[in-house]
Amino acid sequence: MFGRRVAELLRLPAPARLPALTPLPCQHDLPVRTLLIPHRRGYATPGRPRKAVGEPSRPVKRAVKRSAAAADAPDSAAKQMVDAKKEKAAAKVKAAPKAKAAPKAKAAPMTAAAGTNKSKQPPSVTSDSTLGSPAARMRGRPKKVLTEKQAARKTELAAKQKVRLSEQKAKQKEKTAKQKVLTSAADLKSNVNALKEAALAPPKNSRMGAYMTFFAEQAAKFKGNGGTQSEVNQRMGEFVKANAAQWKALPAADVEHYNHLTHTAREAQSAEYKRWVEAHPAGEIATANRARRQLRRMSVPAGSSYKYTSSSWPLIRDERKVKLPVTPYLLFSAHRRASGDFKNINMLEINKLVPQEWKVLDEGEKQKYSKLYREDKKRYAEEYETVYGYPLLTRARRTKKTPAPETAIA
Image (cartoon, rainbow, N blue to C red):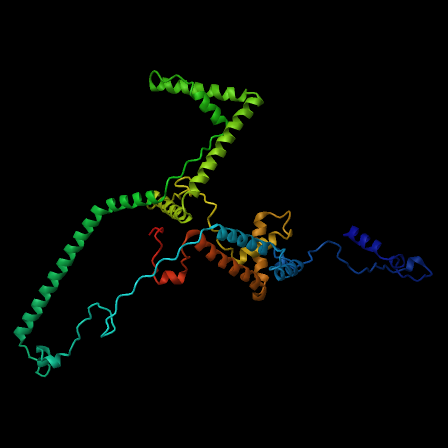
């Protein structure tokens, strides 16, 4: 406390440091006087209120609004992302062959007299009164009054008929359940076979590294298959250890040789894979990927917490795949990340700051990103029809139960 008072005193100008004292005749009669200095807080305090700590500051919010105003500028990251997709889509449209229009179906011939189709027309239905039917004749008659015995008999017959119908329904339901049990296994097997046929069989890419290439070369020289299984396993273990030690002792030139062999084999496999994919239409590849996703889900047993991975039925890689449109929020996120304001910030913190900055924008500032999204969505629909050969099924078309294209899988 005393040190803080001294520091505060030293900050004051020289004349103010001394107390204003008048000389007195006798020093012993001086009253005890305290040094009155206004208290000043010298420790640091945050410049923002506690409730605002962790949120974007006002300068950052103003910068976000300025960047949102320039979202559709040619040099903005969001605009460049959308324009790049448009250029790729235009290149695909130029490279794609023009599809021939399907011939129109001929209309049914019309008759000269009636001017209608030759299909049979339903006969006109006349009322019961004109035909003199029994129902029409019974309308005017009074209702027959039943006796107690007749009413009891009628109620008894109705109850028996109801029990008989319920028994028939139960038997039919049991029979249908048995048929389902018998045919469910066969139906599942046929469905899986159909999906496997639609999933295609692309050439497999080897993931062997330089060491596995060296090991495969040495394994061809292994001759230790004679004897019991335990002896073979023991010799194989010794062989693997010897190969590992030999690999570690290889000179750099030999390691470079095996690296070159591995790299060359991978390039040849990638080229073959690309040729195989391009030999199939893009729509067929998309159908195969849908079948592969369904086979993944079917490979997981019911009630299991295990989630399928990409290793089981991996998707076919196709460069012709149409990229989905980017939502307004993701366009804003890409624009903000390209601004350089998030340098030296953890990714988790960035993921917290970007949504807060998005909430700060009003509807007018978000409209520019929505406009870019609509442009990208239009590009996606046009490119989809060009690449796959059939139009994109929107939600409105799905509700009308539009028949799916031939390449689609139910």
